[in-house]
Length: 249
Ligand SMILES: Nc1ncnc2c1ncn2[C@@H]1O[C@H](COP(=O)(O)OP(=O)(O)O)[C@@H](O)[C@H]1O
Ligand SMILES: [Mg+2]
Figure 1 (cartoon, rainbow, N blue to C red):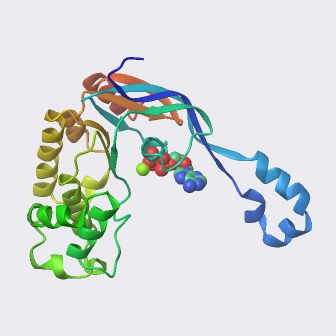
Figure 2: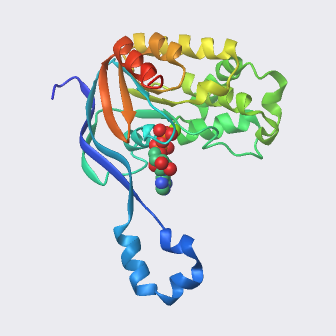
């Protein structure tokens, strides 16, 4: 462990319960309630198994792997949204996360109102947000749509709004989960540029993506999850190559 370590995972596992009895039918569940409860308590799904890694200050870690391998679970653990079942997690600094698309946005509020709401939730004062809001809107390139309720937005437009709020933040640790994928090419490029700027400013980044070119541009090292375990962690090009050839076999 070094004093520059921003994120430390030590043998971290995360289980989720499985409700198989309930799925088998509510009637059978009710008639066998005691054994059903016992079974529920014992059944678990291992979303992440025994993961250990360190991310140092200013480093960018990419997390790759197929759907359902536990990538978002790692980000939620770093963000403190969920707790590990086993193992230790240590986080140094303020975390800002752009996790699921549109989480934290209210569909009936306009883009502008959502920026203000999100800013307040992030701990900005009202006047700080009002200072930043024109810049945020400019980054989003949403034009007049910024005055429309976001239920009228496409997923790409919601991603634009989400990332634009990020640009106003000053985090120590930035978590980005796949959100860039729904944006158009020009916006993706702009977001990558902004992330590189964060990196220059010493921000530690954890970036989950299926876009290997974006991972190459942003990350210093890559963690590959397979069977809910750390299959490999190391140099960007080496890990990506192994990951990509694993599909050919
Ligand atoms: N709240 C939850 N309850 C039960 N299972 C979950 C929950 N969240 C995630 N999972 C399961 O954990 C596994 C890992 O999920 P996730 O971390 O979202 O994968 P990824 O981001 O790599 O696609 C998946 O199989 C998913 O179904
Ligand atoms: Mg995910």
